[in-house]
Length: 172
Image (cartoon, rainbow, N blue to C red):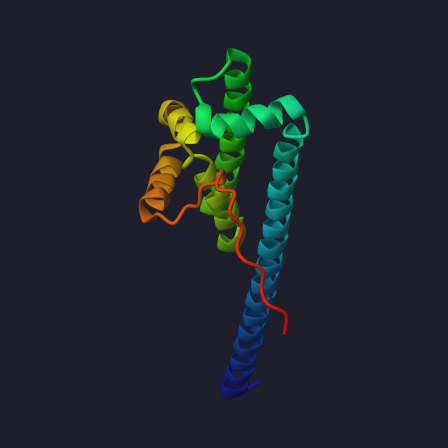
């Protein structure tokens, strides 16, 4: 075989090898995209399960009443109700810390995170929630606290005690 023929075969081999590398990179990109979707779906399901668990706490009438009263009256309430309120709020804050960790890592998309984040901000914006948060916040992640403080500083958090509902839309 001549030198130029060997050189041509070598060039063909390099070309085929380059195509193989490109095909491998495309395959890996597709796998990473699919894995990212799967992780985000699992994270969303984990968050929904946590929210359902938190909501189940409020099925108990005593807990639900203490939670409602606590938003306006904590800590100036009966000891048993104050304990119930603290427990429900800590459970909610731990849920929020988990959601924050998933969001911060990129496993939870902004839309899902901010919906729950705003819900949490609403709870700690009530008079009782603010009293509770002022003393409880020290046990939570500093990065989450910064995020919460920034959200509260932006304002526009609606008080859940407010009973006024928006006017219904007119038909047609």
